[in-house]
Length: 580
Ligand code: PEP
Ligand code: MG
Image 1 (tube, rainbow, N blue to C red):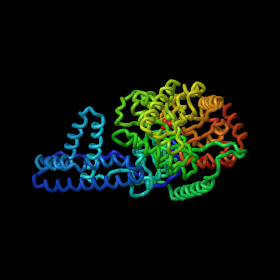
Image 2 (image 1 turned 90 degrees about the vertical axis):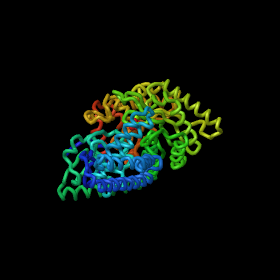
Image 3 (image 1 turned 120 degrees about the horizontal axis):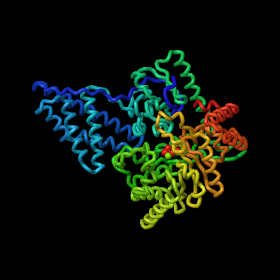
Image 4 (image 1 turned 60 degrees about the vertical axis):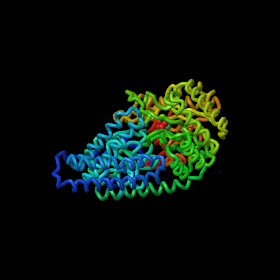
């Protein structure tokens, strides 16, 4: 049954693990004095249990994503371990004769109210932490199992209403075999993370929570957006065989890992990786990435209480550059806003966040925040091949202003006698139609272009990339997009610049012939897509790809273009790659 948007390819058969809002019922009655000691025992057990759980999550987060991300869990442990808080809850049971759960709820709410009254956004944020800890205590005292996808006991397909990017960042990579969520679309960051982690995912599956029960066997097809609930044994066997076959093909693709990404006639195209955290370089190298075409640095700012300082960022960038060992690493400056919220930035709620205060717009206003990041990138540039890329550029003057901040950052480092790459290359993401249309006007200011198809598609077609209702008309194969790509490439080539693509289209095997034929110098994608695209690129001649691109450009509908590209791949006997 087609249920939602195909967001991360692959099949999975596992039991459903429903991530639901728990039903918390509090007993508000007054307890008799003889029940006090029993309630105190419940309380103590809940605190111990919560501590144990948080310690386990802390260890796991530390190993999976590192110290910075684990700090948030450390903060939760500190709230839980606060003796004054514990005494106050105990006292509410003893002197006010409240049930353990009522006492927890009351004291947590009191603390939350105090934090929420304070103006400082950092302190206000602490309210959310206290509430989180309080929730954990309540669930434990009531004996309700806590749903948590960072530490599952067995393999599962996680089913929920909204699986946020930050939940995905701490996901249990060993046990989560599939993601099924009611909200989201193919270019939501949850989808991007799922593809990076190679976890099949379907988002935008509205109503799925009313169809699937916890523990039911599920098949999800992340390439088609289809699910099957409680499948027959024959189906389970057949799908199991397909999963095995896909595993074998992937293994075979592994053999071309070290093959140069060149068309048969020798025309080369760099196939590089999109990463979000330093740990992602491992996957990038595993799949033979020739560099990093997009380091989404905003992930370093997520799941914490304040922005990382220069030193912390420097360490992260240096780690990536050293891991990539001289290969180019395009570090995109912070792209916060849109669907990437950072609570401690206290950004105003906006009617149209994707059209609002985000990315370079924030950076040009908060110059210190921006300069801190630029100093960190520049310092790291002494340890590898770093390039700087600005997101969400609409006009040339933004680039000029951003470059002025780079110049200031460089001067400050000179004053501090710190080394950096004086000739560091600077480029822009082309993800706003105005930049795509006027690409020629940018050429004097920059060294390279990289087309961000995720945003460029939503802005060109006026389709919110995360809105399920309109996801069927969100397509980067639209002729308008193809024409914009062509314009950027032509302007870039005419001016001797380098042109890449780092949106999701770059890693879509269906687009590989088209993008090769259009003349891109570089395609940057989820590491797991690299070998699939490489297989296609290395199987054809450039002249053939150019012919394909030229024919695709002559078609007037996205569906025709997709069908044509699929037919070409099938003619080459390569359409099986689309199923992986
Ligand atoms: C894009 O918009 O295509 C892009 C690569 O950036 P992000 O997905 O992080 O917005
Ligand atoms: Mg973007």
